[in-house]
Image: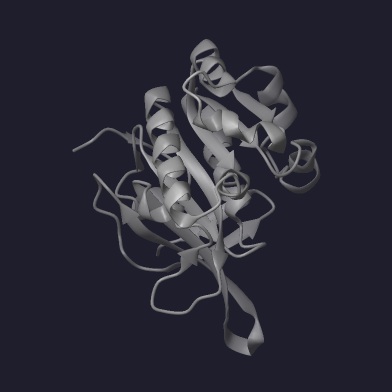
Amino acid sequence: MAEVIKTGMPGLDKMLDGGLPKGSISTISGPTGSGKSTLALQFLVNGARKYEETGLYVFIEESHEAVYRNLSYKGWNLEELELSKKLNFMDYPPHEVDQFLSQNSAIGGLIETMGVSRLVIDSIMPIALLFSDDDERKKGFLKLMNNIRKWKTTTMIIAEELPASGTLPRTTYGIETLSDGWIHVDYRIGKNDERMRGIEVLKMKGANPIMKRFQMEITDSGINVMTK
């Protein structure tokens, strides 16, 4: 069995049969407000706090100041982790996003210098917009995946979804078809017309995940996946 990297979220690690395969690339998809960024940042925070692993969160669409406004949960101590260099943020200018496809990317140099083992890219959309058609986009995504694999990080890529039209969700640009894993978060109308959050592992190469949707909640301490 492949070595696993624990997310530090007990319910999610149970769903993943222990954690994410080391060095894997996973798509984190869901509609706006479903908890994608919270899940991804918590993966990095837990890596730093619980496992002494260095993480890097790359923002393409917005600056990391938004994290301190919107994603600073109880006990996370983001500023302290950032000062210790165990949690790092990078605001990537959209006009330089083509550098992701370069083997000499500044991100690769930073990962090597700082010993980053956990990586989040938020989000895939600006990279997808570099390409004029689906064929070119697929070639570009394959190049991106190859570059990320050279960094040897365990990676989450955040992707927005299209409206559901079948049994499986679909991301806007199909990045989930090329990644090793696919974790989907959502919210559905439940009893008393309340929206209930949920999470599914739809794909994970090299693992034996529980293929079932579980309830998820976002508390003042972050994400809690209820597998019992």
